[in-house]
Length: 139
Length: 161
Image (cartoon, rainbow over all chains, first blue to last red; front, side):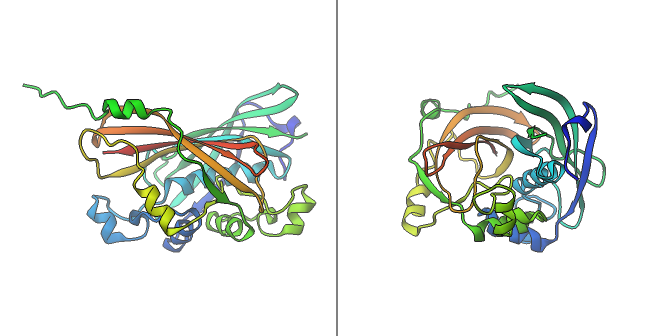
């Protein structure tokens, strides 16, 4: 179901996207993104740097938030900008819940625009990757 | 007695802010798009099936959000780039964390596109945090396609400590 301009209201939540990375997914991401830093797939290496376990790539969480927006738009719009900060670490085999809330709906230069607050949440409900986005809605 | 810490940011680093890198090439091809989409877990066929992408009005498979091409790998070029890290802080910082990513799009990016990117350091910042003395580097990368149009600007934040 695509997002529709008339159905969008400020303050509304968009459908959540639930992720849970296997270690295999992290290796797949390493190859796809070209980020081969060992803290994301080599437990001994990660522990050697003081981490408790391997951690999920920040950029993968950014891409998850991109999927959250893409799936919500459902072909009736495009992402104009999306960004996030990596504030907390996430680990494999733990839920990463991607969420978003509409903060502003407006028209500018003939474009229908929506600003959102977006973030990922860990199983403890902590926002590990807070961010924001602007999308264009076609109709 | 408190001891003043030596600032991490040097004059040489300050002079480096805003200096554009050599342009480098990134290819956007169907195989890399599928691989990126699969690694994220995308289900929309416009990332996998060219007919579906064309039916949705695109030239070919669509670059998924966050995918800005794959740098063309060449061992000799990689060795050269390895040496070009820019000026180093007053003391060596060995640990690196990714602090954040922000991408602004100006046009579609599809399979078959050849992107040319140039990067520059937008700012250096020093902060005292839970990890101790940290250097925050904000880098801006501008991506142009084969027609010379800016398609995306990425702002990346790196944390070294």
